[in-house]
Length: 162
Image (cartoon, rainbow, N blue to C red; front, side, top):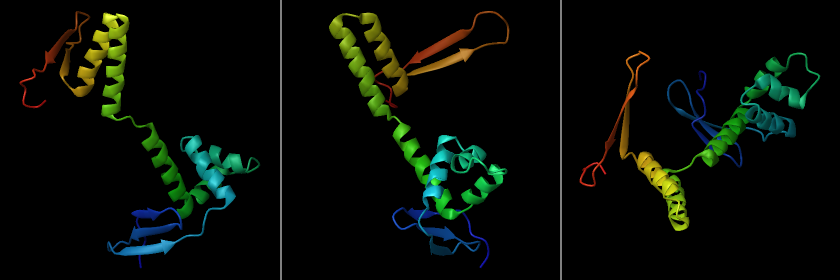
């Protein structure tokens, strides 16, 4: 059997992974659970934004070649899978949905209307329209130091794309 491609599927509890070999045949494997040192290294890789040497120094500050040792540890499939899993969880928790954003802007608009601050209410409503894609901004700059032309197209309620 030839070299394996990166993991395709992962079952977090038992570290079972599914991989494809060079002939695109499915190959399954099981890896031992992470040691405390490997788990700490995976957390440090994520914390240090992928800086492998800095992450390895967290678990072994006396190492003369932290980059090489960190790379060797990251080559372990279970460590690489743990880093990928942590990264995906962070990305999922950081994402904001358009619906949640529009609801928050609507709350700001309503609160501003309630206290009589129409400028903030109109600004929040305009932001809602921009987020929803109702306003299309076109900026034209010919490279001179002259004025910049900005065109804003407002969509109608009769527009079929709304």
